[in-house]
Amino acid sequence: MARVSAAARRELLIEATIRVMVRDGVAKATTRAIVAEANMPLGAFHYCFRSKEELLERVIETITDHTLDPALEGLRADGSLEERLRAGLGAYWQHVLDHPDEHRVTYELTQYALRESGLADVAKRQYQTYLAANTKVLETLAEVSGTTWSVPVPVLARYVTALIDGLTLLYLNEGDAGTAGAALDLGAEYVAGLARI
Image 1 (spheres, rainbow, N blue to C red):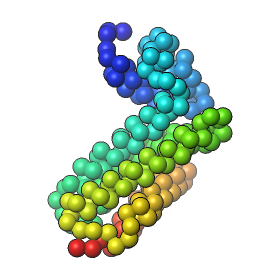
Image 2 (image 1 turned 30 degrees about the horizontal axis):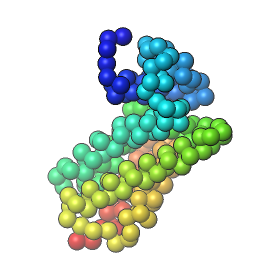
Image 3 (image 1 turned 45 degrees about the vertical axis):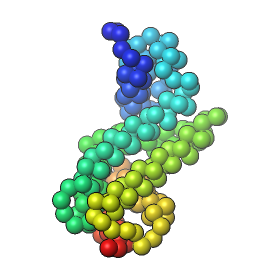
Image 4 (image 1 turned 135 degrees about the horizontal axis):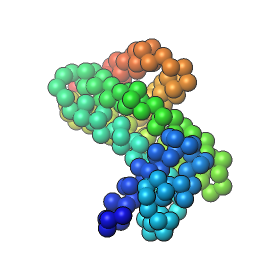
């Protein structure tokens, strides 16, 4: 492999980990499988990550960023607060539709972390990452639309996280994209109704 920085190697290993998890499952994402997928020597993993726990946390952050960045772009588009919120949630939802296996990995990762010795904090930090992402969405939406929220942002972030998480899991198991998308729109309408000028 051509000489690349440690940061670039980390990113390559994270993306390789996601591919292995999507293809083979979380439990089979061994260090050896990951470095083989990334076409790197085994020592590259230990050079880039202190532990598998650190890698799993970065995987969660990366998958979250895959949906958060497009969602934030949607929030900055022209339109009313509700239209912007629908655009942001729509960007997230499109990622679910385009990459369902990546989202399945997140649920599998939660259960894996809770069952594996020494990884329980990974599941906790996973949902802290989701809460932070939805807090950023709500704060950005309030900022770009010149509004405030009628309920505390930490409470509303938990509501939005539960809404998104629940609808995503329901869709991944049921397969009814249209009805799940309509339910997400209903959630957006409700959340938009909590904004105050």
